[in-house]
Structure formats: structure tokens, C-alpha cells
Length: 268
Image 1 (cartoon, rainbow, N blue to C red):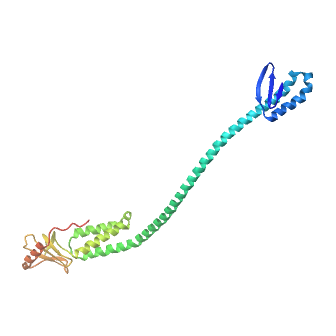
Image 2: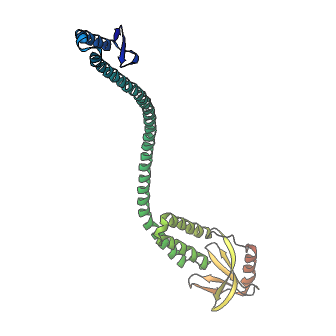
Image 3: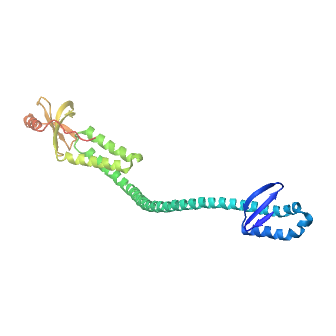
């Protein structure tokens, strides 16, 4: 066995172990062991002293090698963790920015939601207040039509029926009923500002006959047969049609010819 500065040579049997570089503590350990066992080398011989020095040195080498492996493994793991930490930091930054955007949108949506809730509440309140008004309008228009001149009875009745169905159908809401009310009021108002001629069957002095009815606004109703031989008018006081003297036939016939017979289509 020979110990030099920082280098340790060991013979194991007849086969050399080779050259191993040791750190300073290992060299000192080997040197101390050699000094301690040197007096006994003569007594015990080299073969008996060598194992006492060799085993601690080899154990120290193995421990150092194992420690270095653990250090290398930890350095690798630490690098991975640092990289992951940086990646998570970037993700966290992006998520914070996204959270800020979503928070802003959430505030806007909350404001919009409150606005919509208020509008819905106002709409419900208006509907509750408007429906009784619409019902009263319907009743008034219905009574008015019943007491008015009997022109276009089918058209006016159907319009009132649509108005009534809209009032009675809760699934349609108050909007449809309001639309039907305005349709009815505009149509009835328009009758007072227009003249028209249309064909209808009337009971003239107890006789049913087909005539051309001449409506003069809401002021009066006249009629004459298609051949112009019979003319009449609606007697409001008696609520019936009466025949006019034959001298009126020409004037009524002329008025009927002056008014266009083609009526403008009214929206249903």
C-alpha cells in the first residue's frame, strides 16, 4: 500500500484496484489509519492490515458517489421545478388578466340584468293597469257600433271579435290587445271621413233585396237597386230601411255612380 498526496493506491490480492482520486478528508483518513497501523505491520503483516484500511476508504468513496448522484438528481429536479414554477407564474398572470376582463363583463351584465328586471317590472305594472282600460274601450266601441248606422256589419263585427279574443287570451299579452284596439279605433274613425258604395242585402219596407248601399260618412245611408228603379234610406229613428219617393231615384243613382265601387282593402 502507498499513499501519496491526494492519491491512494490499493492492492487487493494480486490485482491492483487502480487509481482513485479522493477528496482531502479521505486522504487524511487513509493517512491516519496508515500511521496508526504502521507499528503493527510487522506483527500482523501487510495482508492483515490492508483490509482495515481498505474498507473505510471504499465505503467513503461509495457514500460520496451516492451523494453526488443524489445531488445531480436534485439539480435536475430543481431545474424542472423552477421551469414549472415560471410556467405557472405566466399562467397565473394570464388568468388574472382574464379574470379582470370577466369581472368587468360580469358587472356590465349585472347592470343590464337589473335594467331588464326593472323594465319587466314596469311592463307588468303597465299591463296590469292597461288591461282594464282596454276592456273599457272595447265595451264602449262595442256599444257604439251597436247603436251606429248598420253599415259593413260583418267587417266591423269581425274586427271587434279579434279585439275581444286578444283581451281574453293571456298568452298573447297586452301588446296584441293594444294593437287590436288601435286597429278598431282607426277603422271606426276612418268611416266618418270617407264615402263608399258596396253591395248588400237589406230589408226595404219588409222586402229583402240586393242593393247598392251608399254610405255618406257616418251621416247617412242610402241605397238603390242595381236597375235604379227603387231607392231608399236608413231611418235612424225607426232603425230600419225605408223607400224613398221615385223622384229620388235619379239623384241616388247619380251619387252611387260618382263614388268608386272598388273599396280599398282594410287590414284584418
